[in-house]
Picture 1: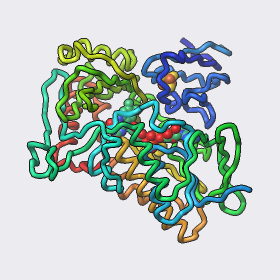
Picture 2 (picture 1 turned 90 degrees about the vertical axis):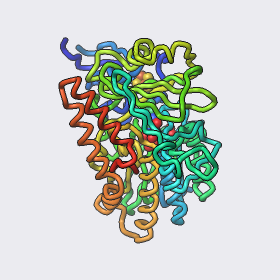
Picture 3 (picture 1 turned 180 degrees about the vertical axis):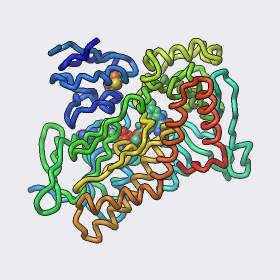
Picture 4 (picture 1 turned 30 degrees about the vertical axis):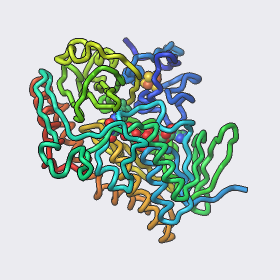
Length: 68
Length: 390
Ligand SMILES: Cc1cc2nc3c(=O)[nH]c(=O)nc-3n(C[C@H](O)[C@H](O)[C@H](O)COP(=O)(O)OP(=O)(O)OC[C@H]3O[C@@H](n4cnc5c(N)ncnc54)[C@H](O)[C@@H]3O)c2cc1C
Ligand code: SF4
């Protein structure tokens, strides 16, 4: 599957344990972080490495493609 | 009017509180901020720390934050073969529950531990602001820097000579200075742990190795006081298709401990990321140093970061005392001395551990890798380990 150019993330807030692991693997510069210590959900991500989805211990990060 | 400090510290975990306390004891004017309302919460830590790790940085073991005393380890392989390293038997004159003996270590409650450490910092003269988020920093032309903060609803800036990033695993402070701080997926263990009732423990930290149960990491069972226990594990997501939650379920239902776990009742769910990685190569910038998880001061074999956060804070606090007394400009070039001191005291050994860890997880053959990890863990926790104090 080809990697999309830009995605926006959704988080299942009930499953999320606020552990911050997604932020720790995120290669963005400072600021790609939500008020709940997760990766940002209010701005598109134009790296789209999707490492945050892998590291999440409860697999509760999903994305929609903004630009394929 | 804008307040002036010698040191502003972002993050009031074990690293930040210790840096703050020691800096204040060195007569510095210190501001410590944390965005949380209750430190240590939600818990992202199992809380195991050695007696030595506490007392060596001037923290006395207090009932206020201790869940349970620990006397040794039980290292298990994938089949459940066990190597007990019980210091009550190995060194009965030193370790034990009697009043004239010491425990080897403790399992602490991070909510109470972090609050206790903050209290000690406050008593040493540190000003602490909770519900205060660090937003950015800027070096100013007079050789100091301005730190932008949000305290409750109010945005404000404070002036300081040196900013300390003690903001943990998800550190942003280093990124403000353009440092590369994110961790490779292969080197961040994805962890989940349950606090449970009705699982018996015996004063030992149990470490279960083996690809079958925790690929790229290990599983553990820790005593948690009041008859409770913690069952947890961390996995490297580059070595498994499944997430930590799936692996924990698999371990509890299908391992050699399934009978032991049969009646367990889950009381709390916690988790997090543990860097099994090398320390940051650059832990300083103009007017800035990093300490604790933010600088990746974490043991790459065990994932333990409490002792290293406390000793890193001790080193940072004492360094800042000397450094600011010497009136040298707080440029990156001059602040490099902090990292040099840290490398001598702790870091070089951590780099060595990282080498050992990399060797194990590079091994493709699973049986061989399992053996290597089991052996390394057993050696690591033995009384004559060269890494005993890390
Ligand atoms: C599942 C798990 C189990 C673990 N078990 C153990 C164990 O048994 N033994 C052990 O030794 N280690 C363990 N560790 C590691 C240990 O928890 C960490 O190494 C340790 O907490 C690091 O301390 P710290 O002070 O560097 O950071 P933290 O404890 O993470 O503190 C950072 C603080 O900074 C604050 N902060 C972050 N950003 C900002 C901001 N922008 N503004 C203001 N405040 C901010 C946070 O709110 C937090 O309070 C475990 C970790 C995990 C994930
Ligand atoms: S990794 Fe998952 S559980 Fe942890 S903070 Fe991110 S979304 Fe939440």
